[in-house]
Image (tube, rainbow, N blue to C red; front, side, top):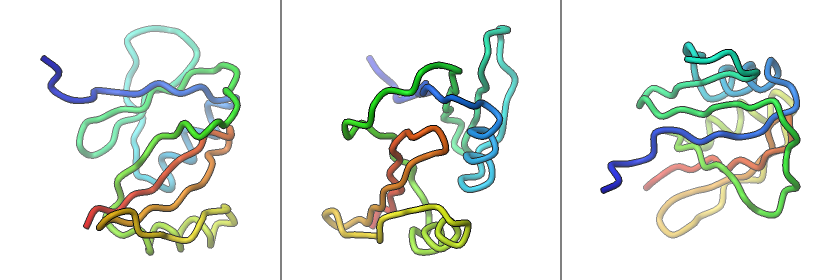
Length: 114
């Protein structure tokens, strides 16, 4: 029986840029890794992780990682003030969502639940 999601692994072309991006804008913190492979592990406040792998980033065909945020308008402003292109928050059911790309080109959704 599945208890939930522990982590997701994504490919990035520059580990340092990705660590900086996810730490700066989404408050992930880097945690120790149990091996010496190239990459980094980041952890959110709820314990869920993103594992960054130094590898070719796949073409954007709509696949994405959705990050739950407390205040999408505040997050949208933080990102756009930093010069990051983000779609305006739009309703999805009773929630709000916006889309952007990380420095490697991975599509991200920022999501605020109702």
